[in-house]
Length: 433
Image 1 (cartoon, rainbow, N blue to C red):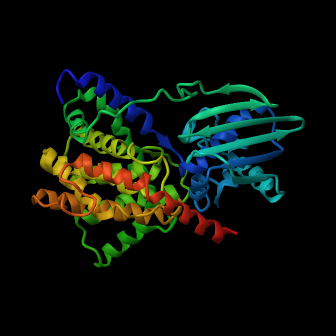
Image 2 (cartoon, helix red, strand yellow):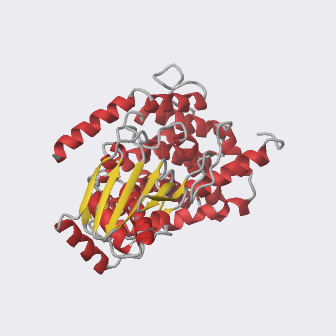
Image 3 (tube, helix red, strand yellow):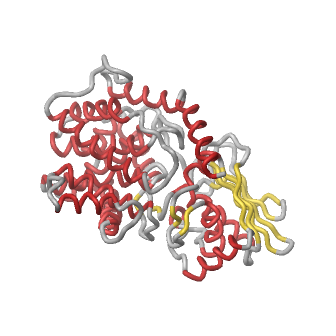
């Protein structure tokens, strides 16, 4: 990237990372509905008596089987209830950070009495949540669309209080543009931008490392990280770098999906994507003895590359985005071990040739397994790239240019995998009925 081009594009990069890499407590799909409920409650100004919620099919898919932090329960109804009763309307994806046992108890009573309903909304957005709260003669309706915190409409007693303008600006978003960016631009920014512009990304290492430690303490979810650590102690796994990457990355996902009340640093609206983009890089940085600046640059490369790739995909789709976030991790690890863009590009291309078919069948404890698979794929791809080997442009959807490979992956997710997504949702809905 030329110096003439860098200021404007680099400013967009910083804006993108600050918008897409934010703390989140719990799986972001039920949290989005909890946020809609909390905002509605703040306008209702009294305790809600009844909640009617509607969500898009994809949000329903990702909210059916995941534990809501602090509640010990899975599903969207409890998220709507506790969001309305004890949620912080101004906390974004950390809406449940002050959730109290009393709020949880009240929410469970609402569910037991049948005063919370959640159904599929008739909408075009893949990411949509709507909560309508009732109390006496009052009602408040809040709609969130296109991203997990993007409030698009607020009504009280059928009177419009807020609606996005024609530019799409909402209460919480300023937007960014990466349409002209390429993978090399992301790389050049991460390794050349002033350190003071990147230092904030170190919070991702702090938050997700704490979540990883928490995941090894208790039997969260499927406790995959703890199981791998146990098998390593028994000699069934080697105590090598790959094993450490899998254990520390997966344990963070275990805790996050299992309902821990610690925040994850998310990426592109997903805590698992944030974990996948963070922890492999942290482990490799420790291995090579990277200082704070080098860690920050590797994390920025990972998170921004993950965002860049994710801009080619739908907000929610049949493609498991832990894979694309791990492509960011591959970039960060490759740079730590080689300092070369060609190694980064080769590693990403190999991952596209490896895990591009992994489906998203809804948020659940098993997501940690997909995070583990994606992290191991990333490290394997990096090792291949270090040896000058990668999936070539003659194979599958991979091309000789990494940006074209990424575009092909996006075309797959936006095209034929839409039918895959419909089939997944049909299967999950049938199981739940």
